[in-house]
Image (cartoon, rainbow, N blue to C red; front, side, top):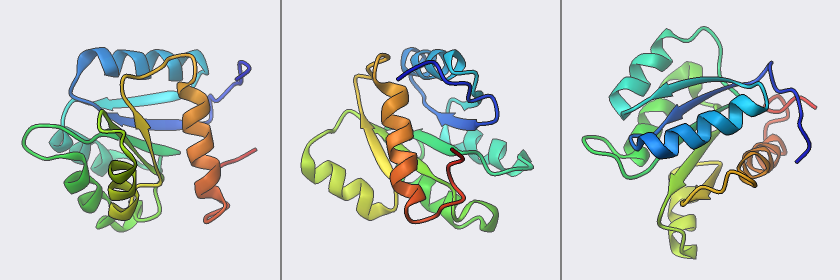
Length: 141
């Protein structure tokens, strides 16, 4: 993906692994996107309650202690302000049945771990564009 200026885009990342979080932040920063990070689902909910705008996407790990990504997704979708937010799951479980389970749970897409910095931004944009087919206001061209 060519170097695109995404400075108008905002992402919320929920990832308890500092290495994965650093990769996500570095890739999004490379494209000038604004990033708000949370190290737990609880922190993410507090962060979302403080936001004044809906981010372009909420990217969350699935396997986290205390509250997993699916439970977090359900809590996010129960918040009227975020009901239409684009949600992307991060998971080390990348079998077809895992993908189906995450999409059935309500995620707009998923990205398999380990993260690939070279293709990560394209994966995110592809998920957002697929979601835009359902909700055209999600992705600005």
